[in-house]
Structure formats: structure tokens, C-alpha cells
Length: 168
Image 1 (cartoon, rainbow, N blue to C red):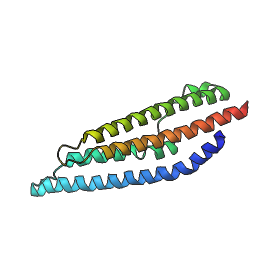
Image 2: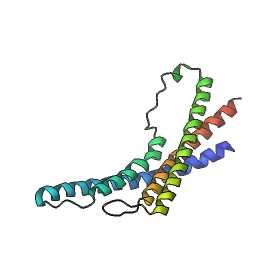
Image 3: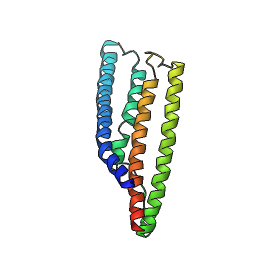
Image 4: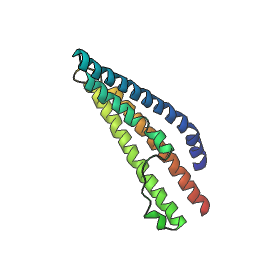
């Protein structure tokens, strides 16, 4: 059962993660263009782009959160295993499962809290200061990025636990 759920997640998560990463890359390119144009118009024509700070802050929320799941899938996050490398393989597998459980639970809690924050922000109608762009869609996108990352860790946890169960 655990293996089937892990297989399903491992088949679907890479596609969704690549899609979210593509949105992040497109946003980064768009931000770079806007910033270059803003600097040039301010420097040469003394006409700064109104709301540049709003655009940059909201853009970075997309650039940071959406590609996180793909980075996790590709093993791009830093991990320090100098201590656990000294353990025997069975003990290392158990410690890895515990760490994956803690990470998944923490990311699940973070997903829930971001979603609650997005709901509150939407209910209060919070917008950016200059351009009055609603902030809640960007919080929902951040929630989606963290949720995807949590699902990647959850799939890794299922694989780890199923391998532990098979060894017994």
C-alpha cells in the first residue's frame, strides 16, 4: 500500500514540480526585464516605474516558493550527513525515516499556517501600498509551493518506511 502511494506521488510530483518551476523561471525573467527597464527609465529619462518595490516583492514570493519542490526532487537542498554516515545502514535508515517524518510534519504545519494567513489576508482585503495589488493570491501560491515540497518529502518518507518494513 505504501509503495503504491509512493509510486503514484513519484510519478505525478515531477510533472507538477516542473510546471511550478517554469512559472518561477518566467517570473524571474519578467522581474529582470522590469528592473532593467525601471533602472534605465529612471537613469536616462528621470521616470522611475511606479510600484517597482511592490512588483519585486510579489515576484520574489513566486520565484522563491514555486521551485522548491523541484529543488527537493533533484536533491538540491543542503544536507549535512557527516554524523549519520558513521551509523550502520539499518540505524541510518531509521534516522533518515525520522528526519523525513519531522520534515514532512513541519512542512505540513507551514502549509496550513500559510493557507490560514492567505485566508485572513483575503478576508481583510490587504493590498500592496503603491499599486494596490491584492496580496492573497501570492500567499496561495506560496502555500502551493510549500505543499508540493511537503508532498515530495512525504513520498520520500513512504519509500523510506516501506523499505524499513520490507527489511523486517
